[in-house]
Length: 597
Image 1 (tube, rainbow, N blue to C red):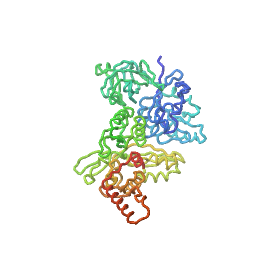
Image 2: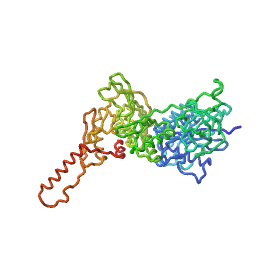
Image 3: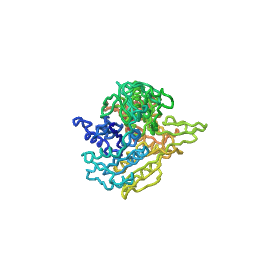
Image 4: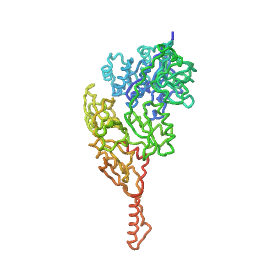
């Protein structure tokens, strides 16, 4: 009889203890030697460890009693929900982890709904029961109202101390259905993640749904029709452990030798070349795969030095493989030169990509104002989609504009409802409904323009609720938008990178705020520099960056006052001449400061 295989993942809101629980599971099962153990072991990127968040899903294989357990650790932040959805299709069960001090949060509900859509077995777990502020009875009630069942089905643990964690392993073996091991069928392997290795080429992380695959097999990617040979196969412990073959039910990796990252798409199905040559009725059918995530925020990424463009292009090609949710398109900007128009799932996603390019590829970048996609109908009947302010045509040629709206779920303590209402009112949000989860906590649902949501609403919400508020969102429909292009001019020259699409009613206040901020970050010149904000050619705000003062009369002493006056007059004429011909260079760090609200 073959060894039973149980595949599961951990889903939770950010900071509820997923990575710490994964550490304890690895310790108890002896997967990692005690001398190699460290906190957040599965968070392999420096960025993950520094920020204390999981960015990339990470699989690991464990042995417990007579069974094999495959865990996929997933991110909790709303920007990386795509990583969660991919993990869920590779497993049969999910641990729903809830913090005993915070209770059910917005991403708890959002990730739970994703798991239920996949028909997964849910095992509810309350974590951090050792903390003084833990309120286990209250959190039990919240979980029961959310997933049903009884309080007896809920496990109570402390991932930090290890209390109750062994019961989690027993529950996985008892409650999660064992993976079907149909090894005699034609090979069907689902790619749920992939990466590029300098020595092995494209490495696909796969769940073997049916059949078996071994080193040296000829394989075909059904979506792209790319064919290659398996140069290496194995499992995760959590480092790569080579094996001769992988069989149905297992989670592992296949190194393909492919050099073109686009040939091994996440969500594609791998089968054997021999199986595709069989009669049509015997050929394996492709697995459903994943819905490709739609980018929500767009921004231009340009190298500070034009000679770094080739390096940026190569870096982008690598990033696109490891991050399937990143949209990249080459573009040219008159002011900034060659670069890329990139689509991100949110502002945190954009920050992470920026930081990775800086650290892993030593690239200094200029990033344009983040924006969302708009649908434009022109007066000549033409329809087009634009993702940046630079693509907006002349206002007189636009008949109407539509923008994407989102439905936002916010969970907050009742005492913070006032500040939350004020914050959302400023963001053009309209209240849909509100439900009390209990006497002290409320769930509020809004619809609002996507442009108002993606920039920094998450951070603002955390600020006004002292960290207790949480949110998740989903895209809904397109609606009419009353927006305009806000141009920023430095010394009467428009700075394309700073142009933004904003609500007409707030264009003046945002323009004023922008030029005031510019006054503090743009370096002073030898001449006075006008900083202006304009809408359709009309100046709506202005500040003047004063000239650097050089004392041209310092060496004079005594004598006729007209000597000083002559020198000052000469300096004044020089400044005036410079103002007409001089150019102002804005450093990259100034751009980054300006793009933060």
